[in-house]
Amino acid sequence: MKLLELKNGWSNHTFPHPPGRRPFVYDAMQMRSGTPLSNVMDFGQDLGPIFEVRVFSQKFVFVADAELAAEMCDETRFHKNLPPALVALREFVGDALFTAFDEEPNWHTAHGVLMPAFAKSAMREYHATMLETVREMFAVWDGVEGPIDVTADMTKLTLETISRCAFSRDFGSFTSRERHPFVDAMVSALMTGMQKGSLDSIPGGKRIARRIDEANAEHRAYVDTLVDDMVRERRETGERHDDLLDRMLYQPHPETGVMLDDQNIREQILTFLVAGHETTSGALSFVLYYLSRDPEVLARAHAEADALLGDDPDAEPTFEMVPRFRYLRRCLDEALRLWPTAPAFTRSPRETTAIAAGTDHEVVMTPDDWAIIVLPMTHRDPKAWGPTAEQFDPDRFLPENSRGRMKNVYKPFGTGERACIGRQFALHEAVLVLARLLHRYDVSADPDYELKIEERLTIVPRGFQLQLRRRTPGAREADAPVVDEGPAEAPSGCPVAH
Image (cartoon, rainbow, N blue to C red; front, side, top):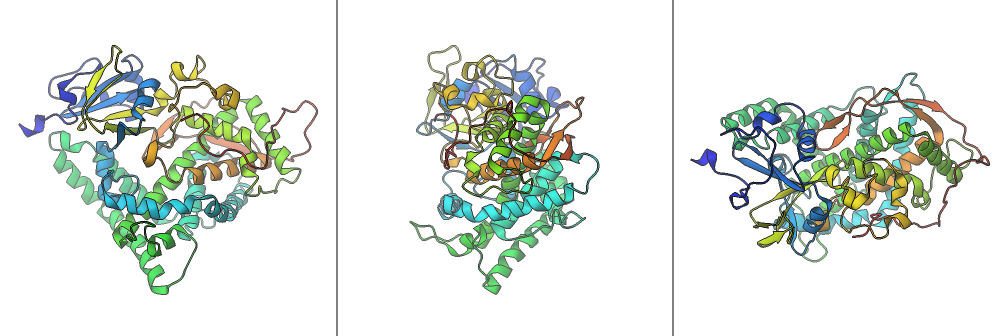
C-alpha cells in the first residue's frame, strides 16, 4: 500500500522515539501541540544522540550529539540533503542556492556567478548602504516614546538592507507608514511551502495541499510578477548597478560561461530576500535579548562601542573598523550558538557508511537516508562546550578558550560548500548595527519577559520588546571594562576550528 511506504527508511532501523507511539499515526499525536523545533528539543533531551520522530509514513531522524554532527560534516563522506519542508519550498524558489540538490547545474552556475559578490571588495561597496538604512531606523526610533518590537524592526532593517544592496530596490520600510505588500505576500508564500512539507505522508494530504495552494495563489502571483517586472525593467532600460541582480543578468559562470535564465534569477532573488534578511534579523534580536539580560555584558559592549566610535553618538564605523568590534562579534557568535537562526540542516552519506562507529549507537546509513542536525542541541552539548553550555558567555569564543575545542561543532551558517554564501554579509551587517545601536542607546527590557521562540523559515524571539534611551557616550571611566581594541584587521571567519 503506497500510503504506508516508509520515507527515509534507514533499512527499517528504529531509533529511540517519543513515548506513546500509536499504530498508523505513530508519533503524530505528540506533535499536535507546540512547534516542530520545540517538540524535537523537548523529546530529544531523553532520547540520546540520535533519535526519530515518525508521522504516518514519514520518518525524521535527528542528531543531537556534537561529535556525531561533526562526523556528518565531513564533506568527503557526507553532503547536503533536503528535508520535506525544503523540498516543498522548491515549488516557490525552485533550484535556487538554498533549495537546490547538489547535482543540479543551476546551483553550480549561480554559486560561481555570485561568489564574487561577497568578496571583500564587494562588501566595501555595501557598507554605505548598511549605514544609510540604520540611520533611517534610528530616525524612526527617536520619535518613539514606548518600547520597540525588536524582531519586527530588525526584520524591516535587514530586509531593506539586502534589497538595496542586492537589487537596488527600496521597500520603504522606514520611510513609509505602510508596509510594502510584497513583504506580506512573500511571507505568506513561504509559509505555504513550509506547511506542505509533510502532507504527502498523511491521508488526504494532497487535497489539503491543493486548498493551501488555492488560498495562496494571489500572493504567489503577486510575488512572481513583482520580481519578474524588476528583472524585465532592468533589462529593458539597460540601467546598470553594482549589485547582485546585475551579476545575475550579465555575468557568466567564470569557468563554463553559462548564464542564469530569467526564471532562475527570479528564484535566486526570492531566496536572497528571504534568507538574506531572516537569518540576520533573528541573530540581532537574540543577541539584543541576551545583552538586555546581563548588565555586565552590556557594559562591556557599550565600552567597546565607545572606545572605537568616540564621544559623538552619531559616529559611524568605517568599513575597516567593523572587524575591530571583537567583543560585539563574540556576543553575536554566542547568541548564534544558543539560538542559530537557521536551526538545522540535513545530511546524507555519499555512499553507504557506518556512523558513530565503535559506539553503542553505531548504525549503517545509505545514500537514501538522511538525518537532521539540530543545532540548538548540538551547540549545547557539554562534551563540546563544557558544563556551562546552556549559559550565555561571549568569552567562550576568546582564542584561548577556543583552542582544543572539537572541530566542526559550530555551524550557524551550515557547513561545507553548501554553507550560506552570504554569511560575511550577515556578520558585517550585524556587527555594524550592534556597534551603532549600543553607541547611541541604552537598552532595557521587561525583566518578566520569558524568551519565546517563533518558528517560521528561521527562528526569532516572539514578543520581545526593548525600551530605548538616548545616551551620551564618553571617555571610559577608570573602572570601565577593559576593551581589546584589536588591530586594524581582525579575523572575520568562523571563530572555532574546522
